[in-house]
Structure formats: structure tokens, C-alpha cells
Image (cartoon, helix red, strand yellow):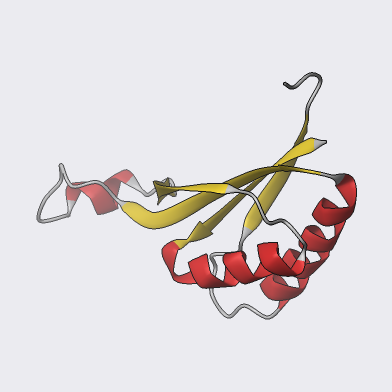
Length: 101
């Protein structure tokens, strides 16, 4: 069993849910997050509201699942990202689990 963590911009939420379903990952959790990219200080200083945060509405998904499901998910994410016309790919990582109850 491993932990798979997936992040995506809010617009791709339905796509990620479909990818999880197609990968036979039925149990997962998700959360709203703000995604950030380092922006140039000049851009921040020239903003009308310099205290405003420069985050993108994003989603974080995670699931404890087996290797076979993760392999299918990663193949599907790779195919999805190859067809994107934006600079916001779906990202995923896998974390091994040493113990669980």
C-alpha cells in the first residue's frame, strides 16, 4: 500500500475524479488549496493591492491504494498532461507507507 498525492487547478477537478475512477481508486480525500508560483518582486510591487495573495485555486487529492492502481493513474495523468494547452499540468507523487492500522 502506498499514498498517492495529486494536485491540480480547480478547473481540472472533474478530470481528476474521472482519472481516479478509471484507475479503480474508489476511496480518496480532497481539499481546497492555493497553488503559488514565485512571481517577480516588480510584479508584486506594481499591483494595485500589494498585500493581495497571488494564488490559484487548486485541489489536493490523496488516497491510500495499491501499486496497480497507481500505475494506471500515472499513465492516465501523463496522457492527460500531454494534451494540455495550459501551463498547469496535473501533478502526482507516491509516498511509500511503512506501517498502517
